[in-house]
Image 1: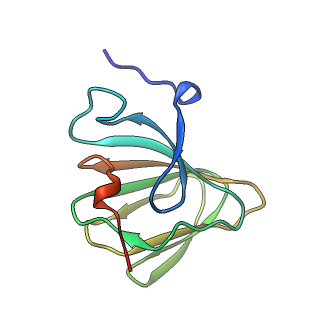
Image 2 (image 1 turned 120 degrees about the horizontal axis):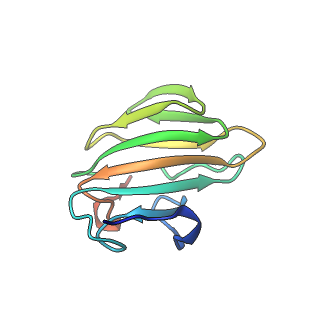
Length: 119
């Protein structure tokens, strides 16, 4: 049985600029087909607008508030919101509250710097 703990996960910065702690993924566990990580953005911080050719992502907001953009469609997001990001969709999220924005990010196939593309 694989069990991960967020408080024991090492933090690193992804290619889009967010700080993440990966719970499951090929780099940290036996998960081969998906990854799960918590991403954190400081107040007013944005990820760099990007897309993934292969990965489908789901963001689940746990703390703070943000502004999400996917292929030109924009919406404010808050705790409890889940956002589907299809492969190939340009996207960016910005922290809009006074506290950090924290979200769970599930990717299938697993997150890879090599599958992150910028303009």
